[in-house]
Structure formats: C-alpha cells, structure tokens
Length: 392
Image (cartoon, rainbow, N blue to C red; front, side, top):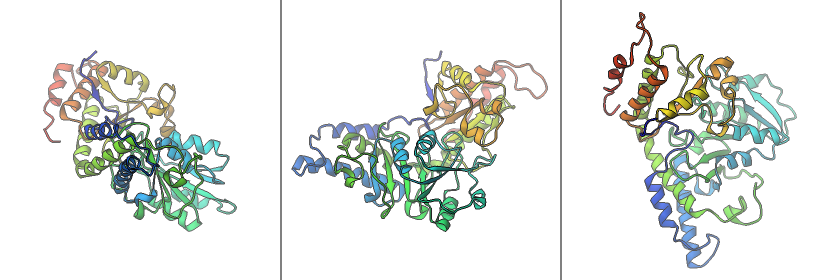
C-alpha cells in the first residue's frame, strides 16, 4: 500500500481550508453567547453576522435570508416539511428523498432522462388540481454524476402553477455562480464542509416573505426560525470557506481541464469504460465513470490500497451493497450502475495527484496482452501520464 495518499473525494467532503481553521481557532476564545446583550455577547453576535454576510454573498442572497443549520441534511429536511404535495426526482440525494418519503405528503415523481437531467417537461401531463400546499424540489447539481439540473425550468413551471421551489445547492455552491434572486427559488440548501469549511454546519436560505414552520423550536435564535445557541466557531469557519469558494469560481476552467485530463487518461488505459453524463452540462470537478464487469465497491477498495481515495456513489450511502439509485433512475442497466465510481476534484488537486490516480488505475487494471489497439504493459503506459502539462 502506498504511503502517499491522494484525495479524489471532494464531493463527499472537502479538506478543511487553512483559512477556515485559523478563523475558527481565533473564535474559540469568544466567551459570549450570541443572544446576550453584553459586550461579550455582542462580539459573538458580530462574528455570526459577518459569517452570515459571507454565505449570503456566495449565493447572491440577502443576509437576513440565511438561516444556519447543522448541515444540508437538516436544511433539506426542514425545507420539505409541511407540504401536501412534493414533486421530486429519483436522482435526488437521500437527504431529500428520505424526508420526503416520511413527510406524509403526496409524492409526484419527476422522471430523469438517460442524459441524467430531470424531465420538467414531463410534468405538463400531470393533473395539477387539488395539490394543496405544494413544492418542487430539484438539486442544482447531482452529487454522483455532477450533472447540472434545469432549476430555472423548474421555477418557470412552478410559477405557472402556484408551486414553491426548493433546490439543494450543496454540490453547486462554489462550482457554478449562484444568484438567489435571479434563480427565483424559495428555499436553497447549503453545506459548509463541501466548500472546505467545518463539518456539522450548513444553511437554509429562505426567500424573504416565504414562511415555513421551524424544524427546531424552543428559543428565539435565527429570528425564531431555528432554536438553539449558534455554533459560533463552526459558523465562522463556514463564512471563511464561503468567501474563498466564491474566489474559486475564477478558476473553474482550470478545474474542468484537470477533470477532462483524468477522463481521457482513464479511458485510454481502459477503453471499455463509460463516462456517465459526458454529453450533459456538469460541474467542473466531477467525473462518474463505469468499468463494465467490475464492482464499484471492489474498485474503491483496490484504489484505496494504492493510496487513492474515490467513492462509489454518495458517501452518505457507504456500506450499502447495491447499485446507485441515481444511475438506476437514469435508466442505466443494473450491471453498469454497480460498476460506476465517482472521482471528484478540488482547487488544490495537482498534476501529481492526477498522475497518481492514473498509476493506481493502471495497477488495478493490471497488464494486458499486446493485441492490436491495446494499451500495452505497465512500463509502456506509465510515461504517457508523467508528462501532463503543468497548469492544466
């Protein structure tokens, strides 16, 4: 097993940014409760409100619309409570699907096409009478495939029929520009640790004028929308990470080039591999690739033994044997869905990281015979991937 570890699972959790860590450490000495009116309390409140502004800027929202939560899972569960009808797709993250299933609401499936995008147009055939209080929930970017979803189309449809709209922007924030005002959704979920902030903190952005019942009652915090003393240090780290993630938008082109270099390299080594969603718009950092005939779980383990961390589907579903519900919802055959892994990059992913991934992929593949069109032996292949241009 390699002593050098290479991380390609940024969609599960991004490494904590040094700036976020420093901001959190500096905050640890703040003794006051943000709800207290004395000097110490006001200082803690200032820290929280500064972070709120930083998160709001990332998604183009008003700071008063940002409500801090324990993470995107809580934000999604909160957003999906209290509805009579919920429109959702099978490609949604489990933190959306699970609370929808237990909400008691009538669930309406939004089909997903083979290209991995929700088919909002299919809802035109649905009878829209007697829906009661209804919401459409649609992620901005899929966590497994990286495929961007037609949220603006969902908003247009919803407005025609008097529906509310929620979007889980967990994977999109910091990877595509987001303007909460122009987007037109009512509710938007965020996670800190996907941005390089600390785990255990997130936010639900609630459009001004939209009213939803608190998920947690018992105090006046967060304008009486989410009770409980704020986790000041984590919120400060979230704010710092949000500011840095906004800057990352300037280099998404470089990130996409690295993702594409990996894609080309993996397919050159194993031509039978299939890139899921290759023809669809994707966030720049995500590659979902299937190796027919291989088990995704086994591949993850073998690559881990080679010192490379990737994932099979959502990290929240780790330990479960079976194919991805996302890929099945797209109509992929079960054997293909069970062989797909996710490679996700981040701003600090380097050329050397790419070389290590390709070397690990080659080790997992093993030597092949020199048939016409084959790649060849390990010694014949490796030099091709040691000359990835710097700055790609």
